[in-house]
Length: 165
Image (spheres, rainbow, N blue to C red):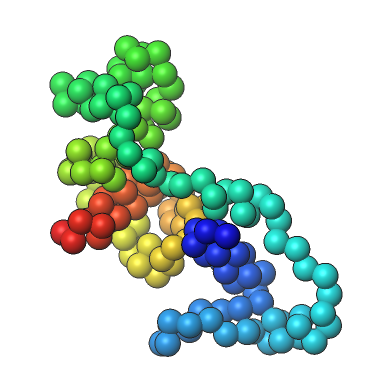
């Protein structure tokens, strides 16, 4: 089991109300529901979907030639829609490329994707819920903030953390 999958299982147990994270000690403890659950010893299964989603990384481990092609168009001030049309790919794929380019430090300013106010809101929620799935983060944020904006913020934060910036 990967670290990402372990985190997904812990998150699932928190969502089910079986464990809770202590903000003070940064550890996990059983809730009253969790204690009652253990006394009953019912069968309990973690859905495969939880493990499968957790096995898929949020960012590419390395950049490909297709990422770099997207970067060249972005550097020429092309829009996401324009890049998608020129490259015959979807806008979502272009956005995923751009997110990965941020993660790998090829794009530093995410202001074109997420304004400063939204960056601040996302940053606060991520600080409260580190290592949490995108869906859970999204549920904690205003509806106006999109999944891709969250991904841009996570990519920028992780780039800075990974490179000691």
